[in-house]
Structure formats: structure tokens, C-alpha cells
Image (cartoon, rainbow, N blue to C red; front, top):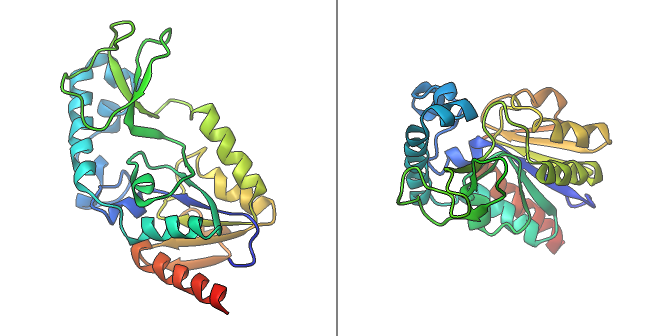
Length: 241
């Protein structure tokens, strides 16, 4: 990675699972979908049917995330960015742990659980929040409609600005660190493939093989919190030589 002129990281739920946040596509107790049906909680139709139930689920998730802490994997990525090795983190996660770890340029492809927006298509109200709303479901201060989490639900497109920035970063990159993702969620999973198609190196860090593995030039098996600090140390040693 020391020879890279422009590297990015692409992260999925696996890196946050090490901080105690359940994944969507894992198995057993580590998977949100093992306990909840996505069509009942993470679609526009679900919100229209029962906004209170959807919000109760998101408040539960917010409380879980508030108790979590960035792990050594998040911190290593922030330090790699500080060294100029990583130019940005493109993430599928909505928890904000990369920012809390110190990463400065974070592209959130699936939105953020710490933002709300109005459910009224004609209203442009958006705002950041630091904690779960007191009123469930919360109302838009601009038009009175319900506010919803500013996240991408099933059946919704990615935010154009975030997607455009991610694609531009991928096209400019000669290396990508792919960390803790199944590679099964599109169009987000195209980002490592764009780097690969441009002649870049794909380095995957994961506890098991994924849909990205066939395209990886290097596969580092293990938890991000264990592998990334070792990678950071190797980079630091290279700087000192």
C-alpha cells in the first residue's frame, strides 16, 4: 500500500459487528434479519403502514449504537487516512463509527442513522441528531409530516451525491481495502469492482470469503480489529525505513 498514490477503504457491517452492532446478513444472534423482517421495518411501505413501529426499531438501534465504541479496525483506518495512505472511507454502514474513530472523509452510501429527513417528498427538511427523538414518530418542524431516518431502505435508490462521490473516488484509486462486507448489496458492491476494472489492487479483509473474494488480489482472513492494526504497523515500519 505504500506504493499506492490513491487508495480508499470500502467497509461493510462486519467492521461494526466487532463493536457489538448486529449485522443485517449474518447468521444467528449476529443478524438483525434473524429477528426482524426487512419488509416490515426497512421499506417505505412499512413506514407508511406503521411509522411508530419502524421508529421504535430505529430507536432501539440508536441506543445500541450509542453504547458501542469504535474498535481497533475503525481506528486503524483513521490513522491510515492521517498518514495520507487512505484518501477516503466509502461505507455501507449508517452508524457513524468511522467518524467517531477520527476518519475525516467518509462517504455514507446508505445514509446515516444520525440524520432525519421529512417523509413528505415536497419538503426538503433534513437535520442531524445526537440522540433518539423524544417524540415517536417525530414531526417535521417545517411542514408537520412525519420525519424518517435518513437511511436508504429496500427499494430506494442511493443518494446521488454520495454515489457520485464514491464512483469518482473508485475511478481515481489504484487500491481499495474491502473490509467486512458480504459484497451482496448492489449498487454499493460495484465500488471495489470499479477499482479492479481500472487496474487497481483489491485487498480484502474478512472473516470468511465473500462475493468480492474472486476479484481480490490479496485476501487477509481475520477480524478487521486484528488485521488492520497489523497492516497499519507494517505501513508505519515502511515509513521508518
